[in-house]
Length: 224
Length: 224
DNA sequence: GGGCGCCCGTTTGTTGACAGTTGACATGCC
DNA sequence: GGCATGTCAACTGTCAACAAACGGGCGCCC
Image (cartoon, rainbow over all chains, first blue to last red):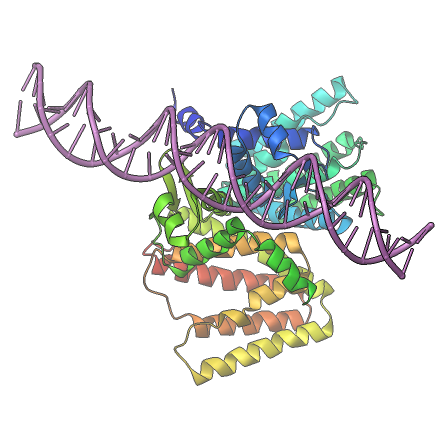
């Protein structure tokens, strides 16, 4: 058994920790609607644990920005105003534009080759099933962050991405942006291959701006 | 009683919440050394509460990156490797360089005038007491973040700043960088007054790079 | 003498119960 | 009819006790 697995088991070896990931998945999967209140008694019973570990998990998810806790009233799945969604995309822009600059400076040629492989694979998958959602496990963004090698930026970005994912749960419709996103990704990778940090940063900013427009539109917010 | 105060009272109206801020202050004030373990029983007794609320506060501070919780072993005041400190400064660079660009684009002339007033006041205070520490309540960085008007970026930056503050607790010596920082701040504000986003971003990057060097040196790490 | 395994005190993880607060409903008054 | 007040059930905040896990110390075996 390798260390990573051991460490993961250790990290999950407690009700509180396991509940945290279960709850997070429930929130992000849409099993709990934004604004919905968490009833500690019934949820803890449903999960087969007591209120203590559940409350601890709630505290962590609140610190992560997925729950809003109000004293003596309870924990609610977080809702987002338009300005908050815009702020989150701006946060991602700040972080991920810096990430691609770092990748341009630091990544090996093989790693960058892997990026274009990734885009090509996604292209083929999308050609085979044109209306499918963008395959999450082939996510270019997480790959880029991994290549940047900065765990702190990685955590911050992941948090912002999750909050955006939750915000989009407020709308039923998911805009079919897969093809557009793919084109933007291709342009982004092309800039990285040239190791042109400025151009790569602009490509990322443009990509995120387009994603933001799509999100705001899906949420019924007036996109400027 | 104004709303802000009411909201703050509400937010602090519970042992768990109050303990969170008390504990955070204890950690950042240096009352608890990095690496030190928190004994839940003795600390809860010292605070006059039970272990439940204390544990909840610990969970939130762990999510904030100030504590490290290891299953069945306890919560420890976080320690930092050199690479982690470097990552944090890189994170701040990504965030705060974006912040100053936003300020250049969005801040009013009066707000920018306020920035130079701030630098001037700090200058005078530093001239009166040359060896004093950099006055925290006149912190230019938080002012800039406030002017950017982005709460999400603000929270992320605050978290990074606090982690750096904690990391520096691992070293006794605080480098006397106040005068240098002031000069860098002045250059930064000058660029903002010209609303030159590129130059302001570069000034912020240079300022943070200098701060990073100072921090790494104080921590006894080999600065590259 | 050194290494291995067991045991026990200490500390954390979890539970169930109690107390205080909130929001909603019903009642009474203007 | 509308508004203020009182009451009540439901829920959260807190506590104290129980159970499991960890690690240090001891003795035993080689």
